[in-house]
Length: 383
Image (cartoon, rainbow, N blue to C red; front, side, top):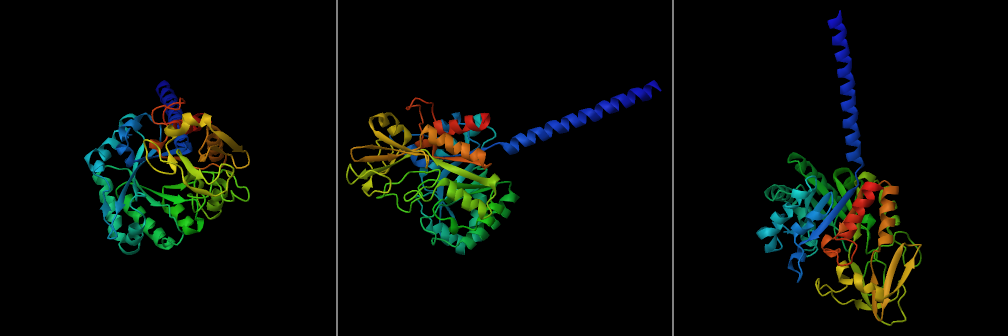
């Protein structure tokens, strides 16, 4: 009898241990499921700057996903390498992120803005199966975990949304076979350019680039990324766009709000005409390192903003700066925190950071290197 009682006691203990283990597993799964995404982009043009940023310098960041921008495509559905840097060292260097961030997922962007969208449109329409196979082969060859299809269009008439939905469906099926992931990047300007329900069904991530809401950012002064709408000059906003996507069937747990790290700059026609919506005469001067008119890396402007006047709008949650004929719109720490809070309050999947190489790469601003991705990491892990 004592042997039987001991066996029963041991069996009871075993059942308790099994329950405890199951509870721990479920707890771990719930933590993983609840983890907010931080999708960080790297633009390979940064490797050619006077002071370059190369992929291995991103190893100190705490992103959940990294996207290499990027590669092109031919109209026949073949992958096109855009820079010799990519195959010489860029792709391999990008893989070094895994050494310090073992759980990170590494994606490649198809296509880069340098390649344009016409070839991708034609390949999707006429060479869809070829493109699907080309993508699968490329991901395995260069050891990427997934691909992000870039459909940030400059016109809602630029492609057939039904053809895109069919392509994403086919690509999803093919990538399942090789255990690869699929993301789609979309513009906030043209909500009706996408079959939102299909994208939400088949893509693992939908990265909504929630900035540059006006059709032309060249000559009309515009806030980079208003969180909320106001009339007459901030009708479209992060909130209005997210609301539209959710109403159209987008799944919250797949929708990431992509934040811009850079400053959008303008040249004023007159120093007295500097309100949002006023006309400018063109983009601001190019930065000394990035050399792109209308855009400044965060590190190129942060220490000069104290010399500028500023206007903050609590309705739209924006701040812009002005000095002489220079006009700048950029995310501040306050506006970033408001967007991160918005993501959590609305139970969205997370944020994107576009791009890491245009953020404060070496703590020039004094708040820590790669401040925006680090702020998101701190906020999501403690908030």
